[in-house]
Length: 410
Image 1 (spheres, rainbow, N blue to C red):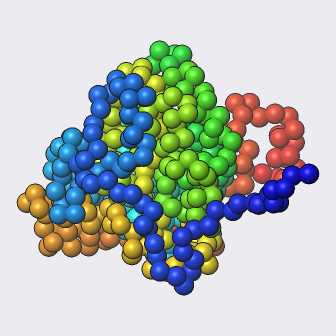
Image 2: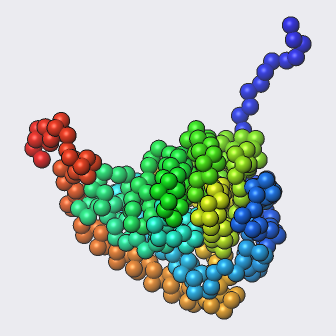
Image 3: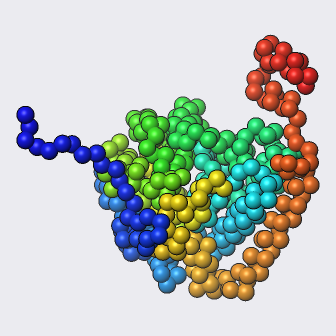
């Protein structure tokens, strides 16, 4: 008989519960400009340290510093600022619309706008994203019509997906945005497969997969890393670590790896962590990884350290599992305000121009919303026809579906 005590079962716990004082002391933040920028063709084993640091460009004084800086002009950054402001205004109006019963469901991006808006500018036309439900910035930054986004949310007569998808689960091949799947982590294996097919066809297009911190616990995440590393797929695998899954903190999925980026080290691929609230840093790291993929140097795993300010969705109450003031204590700040302050310091922007832009953007979003609602909402106005469920699935409709359609009288 063993003289040791019984086994114990370990369940990770967050540093603080609702009612407690927010604590981010475990988030080790590298000084802006400190983390080196390796050559694109660097050997993965030579940059293992980048999986544990955080690449930052904007310091607390609003300056862009270090080797990852100065890749975008002020004009390009002003465009990026407007993209983030547009996404934020869009979010606010659609959240309100859901509360008014005009749609069944919505998911905000508050605090995470820089991740998708900045990364999109690192891609080329024809590249394909395999997103989750919190990367609408990829569409905003690529010029996808906001009217189409709203009509899809409302499932009205102009819904480009004919009412066959949940709200916020957009799809646009022309804008490099693969149909969103509600089954999370599938995005990674799909992105790797698409990238492998692009290489087999001798094409020049690369893929980007997206996943949240909670979904890294799914088996699809690990399967994707096996195939990406084995076949050197031209893909960028993005983990958005916003600290919380729907109700569990990041430690449940991260386990003992220390960081999510570190998961890539065991597969022999470059793995980097970046400040997800720093537009300049996100773009610079995304551009580095995309160039690596396009030069046949294989996949890159990127962890974006950010924070989900709002609820997981309109079906979620974050007050049940985290302190109400936690978002205010997040040490990496607000991505919109940080880029705004940088551009003001550069002399390319001002407080007055920012307020004017906020008003203009909100007015344009409201105008599009009114147009979208004129074509119907969840409970009013015209909707897609029931016959649409039989269209666009098969090139030739099978006989059993033809019979079902006839029986339904549509």
